[in-house]
Image 1 (cartoon, rainbow, N blue to C red):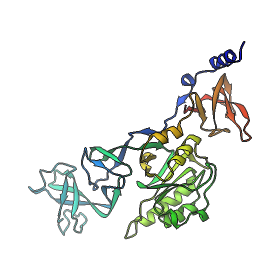
Image 2: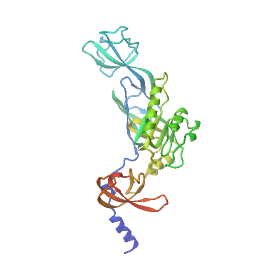
Image 3: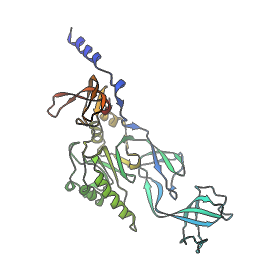
Image 4: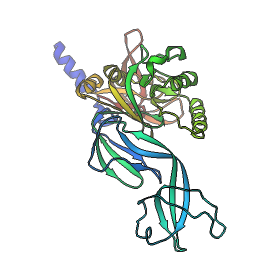
Length: 359
């Protein structure tokens, strides 16, 4: 048998990952971003309107208050969700209800049978900027749908408010942890790529220096709790803090940035990008073709998403059938060839459930 025929025979003997491994959700163009609207929030755009990255999108109120006014002829015809400005609520309560101060910007909640119209009044306004270029597809009382034009990348953990900035790769390797001493004033307004993990000290320093967002491989739940506590204190302040977002691409704990996403981020260094923490999405502006090419992998490439060989890429070369794993569960497994730290090819048997197809 010739070498070419032998290679073809080996290729035919390998199982098709498309039959046994679930596909990963890779980078894509044209993602629909859904931004939530609170009761008193006001969209500053209209359906069908084109928006640019950083354009004012939503007027968000940090504090909400319920206001009750008499159902007069001026308000009874307004449907729930309608805007109502210049409202002067009564100075004295009715039926023991709590008195309210003046509220000028409100949204109708309901017209009660008791002759009272209930409104949602907002104060301490902040403006949410568009995290991506695109166009507004739909606006409902509860959300704003924005169809983005850039390359969208999914993460595992998101925190903060929508923000945007210029991508700055601050580490040399995807498995490197960003130290607080490496964050300086030159990163103000940037989206920092921080490697495998960033601790609360570096996060606090980044926020204090005006960093727009941080992208890391993993984040600890303890650091997230401290961020939430810090955000609650800033919300209670007279002036709201500038938007800040955190996106972990690999999940909780210390996790290197997946190799194909690391290649994409390095290719996007210097580009403008936005982060939507609620949907755990990063959207990179500009020409998508170089980014998609950087993240592309050969056909049949798989990635280990958990376990001992987490974040390794390789090729599925065989099936082991059902096996009992260290957790005690029985599940089908497969043999995956990955490249080790010394450059040699290593073969490992892993559950098929911890594989995803990226090629």
